[in-house]
Length: 138
Image (cartoon, rainbow, N blue to C red; front, side):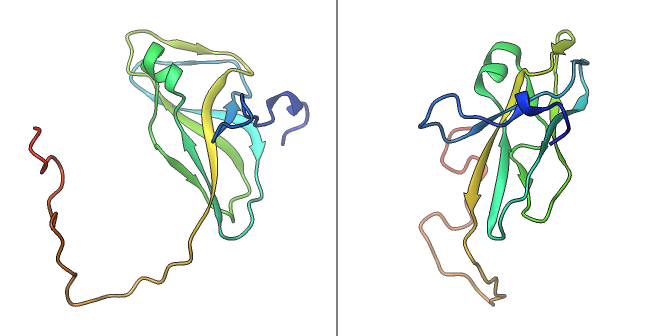
C-alpha cells in the first residue's frame, strides 16, 4: 500500500458480502470513449493457489453505464504491483472520479488443482458444441 492510503483499504460494505470494495487513489476524469487505468494504492500478496478477480460495481454500471474493460480481471498470486482498474466510459459525457470513490469490487477465490490433458475426442453431451445463442433466443 502506498503511504497515506490507509483510507483506501479494501472493505466489505456488509459482513456477508462476497466482494471487497476497491477505491480510487486519485482524483481524475474518465473521458468518453476511452479505457483509463485508475490506481487504487493497493498491493496484494496472495497465497499460492488463490486469485483475486476484479469485477464491476453494479451501481456504476446501472446509473452511469461505466464498465471494466477487462472484466473480470485476474490478479495472480505472483503479482506484486499496484492494483489498477481498467475503466471504460461509453459516454455521453466525461465522468469524474474522486479519491476514495468505490470503483470496482474484488473477490478472492481458491483455485482448484487441475491437470490439462490432450485427448483425441470428448465425451458426448446433450448440448454438444452448441453455444452463442444455441438455446434459441437470437
